[in-house]
Image (cartoon, rainbow, N blue to C red; front, side):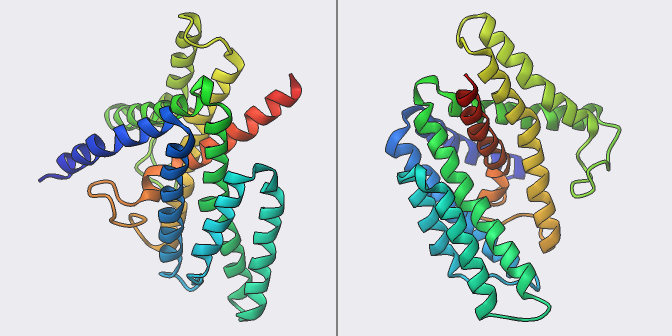
Length: 265
C-alpha cells in the first residue's frame, strides 16, 4: 500500500468519526477530545524525552485532570491554569538541575496548556455553540485550508523557505489558505445558511490564518526535538499532534474571540 493509499484509507475511517462527534456534540464531543488530549499529551512528553529537557510521565495524569476539570467546570479554567503553573514550579524545585530546571518547567507548563487546556477550550466552544455548529464549520474550513494551501503551494508555489521550521511551505500556499475560508463563509452568509457575518469571519480567520500558524508551531516543536512526525500512530499521517495542530490553535483562538464578541455585544 502506497503512502497516499494509507492516508486515504485512514481518512475514510476517521473523518466520519470526527464529523459525527462535532455534529452530535455533548458526550460524543467530550469523548473524542478526551482521547485527543490524552494522545497529544503522551506524544508531547515522548517527543521531549528525545531532547535534553525530559519531562516526567507524571504530567500525563496531571494534564488529563486539568482537561477534565475545565470541560466539566469551565469557570475553573483560571484556577486550573494557575495550579498547573505551581505544579511546574514545584516540579522544577524537586528535580532541580542548574542547566535544565527552568527550560524543563517552562516546557512542562507549555505542554499542559497545549495538550490539555486548549482541547478543553475547544470542547467548551463546541458545547456552548452547539446550535450554530460553529466547531463543525471550523473543522471543515481547516481541512479545506490545508488542502488548498498544499495543492496551490505544490503547483504554483515559488517563494519557499520563508518559514524556516517548514521550508517546503510556500507564501503562495499560505496566502491561498488564508483567503479561501473567507470566500467560503461570505458565500454561506449570502445564501442564508448562517446569519452572523462577524462570527463567520472570525471562524474564517481562525481556520485560514491561526490554523496555519498552529501547523507551523508544531513543526517548530518537531524540529526542536529532531523528529519528522510527533509519532507513527496514524499510518500515512504521523501522530495525533500532526493531525490536530491546526485545530488546537484555531479552536482556542475562536473560543476566546467568541467570548470577547459576546461581551462586546
